[in-house]
Image (tube, rainbow, N blue to C red; front, top):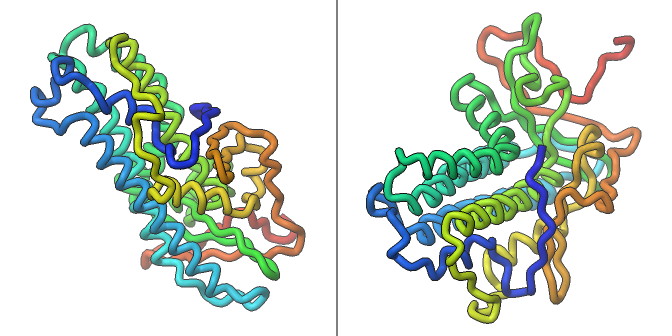
Length: 311
């Protein structure tokens, strides 16, 4: 399940809708101090900044990995920095949802009131498609001793890197956990995963912004002209780098809803789902490799997307 989005921005105005909703909130309608919390806009800005920085760090590591890859002679990649950057981004994405819940609470004097609980229930339903996905991953890593594992398809001149969540398999051994990879035989490519998360963060912003306007219809929206133009912001940089990612996805991802981040000289767009993305499949003859590690007991490991001959 997804939170759909179809949104366009002028260059220099790439920012989530919630920023404009919170920018001129009259303090008389805010109760963040009741909860010993930051001003909602300050909280939101910090949360967005963490996500943006960590996503750009992940892209830096991906760029380094691509430079180290030599066509057919695929040497053992320096995968650990990539997994660490992925783990940090996943944590920031999960924390962002908690931050959004805190922002919503700041509009209520009493978080035990019937009004708050009703509004929170509506917001929870709106965010659930994304929270179910990211929460499942982060909670499994933290509470089930799951591991992030590097995975890459490669062929001359191209590589499609990604990751999967490793856990125990029925019958013994370790492989993609079915609690996250329902078929027990798949992973997440960075070329789809990064656009998916960016689209989702902006879609979450729209959901929360709409909820706040339902709470207080008098909330003022700032128009685009009220903002300074900034075509060199970290968000602009992130959009530019994500839009340039190759459209090669892992085999099962070809059939999933397609997220797209687009950037031209005058406009940026987020579209999800966007069927015209036309992601390209991994070509026949491509190789696949992963990096696994033992735990002193396990001797059997399953590589995603690989079926033994004769199986």
